Each structure stands twice: as structure tokens, then as C-alpha cells.
Amino acid sequence: MEREYSSSSADRSSSSTSQPTKRRSDLLNIFMSAACLNSSSAGTGKGQSRFSSNKVKHGFHLIEGKSGHDMEDYIVAEYRYENNHELGLFAIFDGHLGDGVPSYLKDNLFNNILREPIFWSDPEAAIKHAYQSTNKFILENSKQLGPGGSTAVTAIVVDGKDLWIANVGDSRAVLCERGTANQITVDHEPDVERQNIEERGGFVTLFPGDVPRVNGQLAVARAFGDQSLKAHLSSEPDVRHVPIDSTMKFVILASDGLWKVIKNNEAVNLVKSMRDPQAAAKRLTTEALARKSSDDISCIVIRFRS
View 1 (cartoon, rainbow, N blue to C red):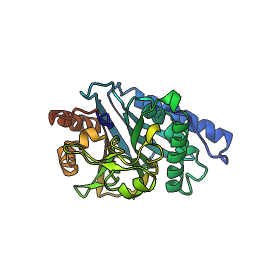
View 2 (spheres, one colour):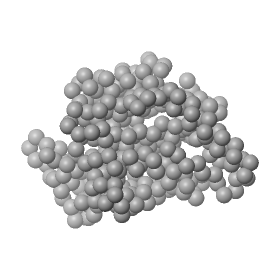
View 3 (cartoon, helix red, strand yellow):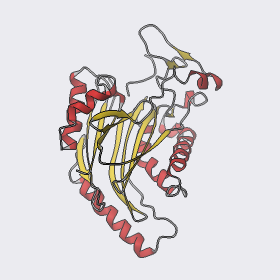
């Protein structure tokens, strides 16, 4: 995210899992993590599921922006074996005013989600609770993590069959379904959520030549962190469950550095003929850069049944 102000992985098994099963899960997670890391560098990489009959492949690519600050985008792209299920865990965290918050989210948000006791029985409630409890910790530790914040889009693919998408802010997920683009996240814009912001004591500005901002500062209505605006922002995600079927070919996760210059249908059309998701992610980020996006640009492409 451009400076919006104007101017992995601890493994967890359920309590009922036996010790031999837990050791098997731990070994599988080590194997899958190694498989992913071997094909990745700092700004690009790819991987695939290992055990599900419905195969999943992913690729990612990141480009540092030209806004005069260090890279503030972080991603997660990995697989874990939990509770006899293979999980694909994917996320983009788009920070602003420093990288303390997105870096913390990269290391902790999925762990917090999977540690929720109700995750396997009620994933939506577990994801919402983990988002909000994680934000509470971030705000309570803003001296260490910094005053900034982060948007987020997270995707959990369960056994290649179910997709759980959640987001706060304007990082977005777009699904290729029947060959066309279907946005499955919600852009949390201040002008749309004006009533909620005002009910919390905040206000929304819209100055000539600018975008709507919370208290004249932040260009999204929901985010993690942002200590100075905590009373007026929400960290409650929109969560959506998508059963994966044969009409769905891939999903694109990207930060707003891409979506500011590429429309949903353009993004899908640019890469729907590409079988390699890493090449597809690079194609999208390179196109955003060619279209003069100055923000950090991060993209993950997840292909189903490849």
C-alpha cells in the first residue's frame, strides 16, 4: 500500500490427535515447507500441494514500489498438514507507515486462526475471532510494532476442495470462474463505511484530487493496527466460503498496487491461458508496473486441479 496517510509457522494439532499422528503431521509440514522454500527467492516463488487428490499449484511475485519507502508488502504461501487435512495458506499483507505490522501478521495470523478451538467446526467464526484478537495484540504492542498498520487478504484452501477467503482493507481476491472475473472480497472504502466510522466518532474527508480518507488520513475503513485511528477503524474481516468446482480455474490475490491500475476482468484475461502460476503472477505485477503503479505490488496466483 502506498503510504495511505496523506502527505512461518508453528504447527498445531487438535487436542484429540495422538502423538504418532502429530509426529507424522510435523514431518509432513517440514517436508512441504522445504519443498516450497527450495523453489522460492525473496521476490518470487512457486509450490504445490503434495497429498490432496485435488491438486493446487501457486506462484507469487513481488515488486518494490517507487513511493520512496522500503518494501512494506509481505506474503505467505505455504502448505501444512493439520488434523488429517492438507491446507494451502496464502496471504498478502500490505503495510503502511512501516513494516512492523505486516511482518507480525506474516508470522502469526495463520497460527492464530488455526489455534482457534472452533476452526474445524466453524471456520468463519474462527477466522473473524483470530483477526480481531490479533489486531488487539498489535494495538497493545504498538510501541514495539510501530504506529502503522496493514490491510490483509487471506486464503485457506482445504484439501483442494474448499476455499475460505477473508480480507480487511483493499487487498483483493478475484476468482476466475467460467472464464470470467468474480471478485470474492470486499474493498473497505471510507465513503462506503462512512456511517460506521462516524458512529465511532470519526469522520471521512474527500479533498479535491484525493480519495476518501478516515480522519483525513487513511484510505481504507478496515485495517490491522493504526494506533492513532484505532477508535474509528474496524478489523472485522469479510469472510467467504467458496466450494471449489470444475468451473473455477484460479484465484488471484493482490495488493492495491496492482488493482489501482488493472481491472478485475483485465487481470483474469491476461493470465487465464497461462498454466504456470508463478509466470502468471510475474505477468500481472510486470503489467502493473508498466501501467505506472508506484506502489509496492504483490501478487499470488493459485491454480486449482492443475
